[in-house]
Image (cartoon, rainbow, N blue to C red; front, side, top):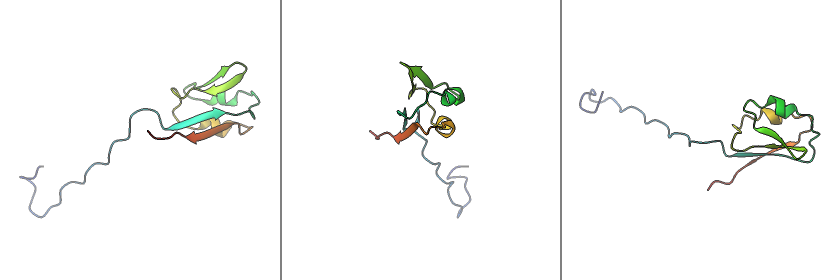
Length: 87
């Protein structure tokens, strides 16, 4: 239905909400020095964004979806989340 075929007095359809920006969420996860190396986060991450490196674990920002499952499962509370600055 367009403006010519819409009955008089009826309101125009509501505008759609703006689309979400493409790409990963603006969230940065870091593994701090409380990490015990238990690997719970490594096994829980659905996209395998938690990786070992040099005897420690780190979160690959390019793979992370921001689900925070690693944060929830960490028994040492060793994964910190910090929103990134918007450009």
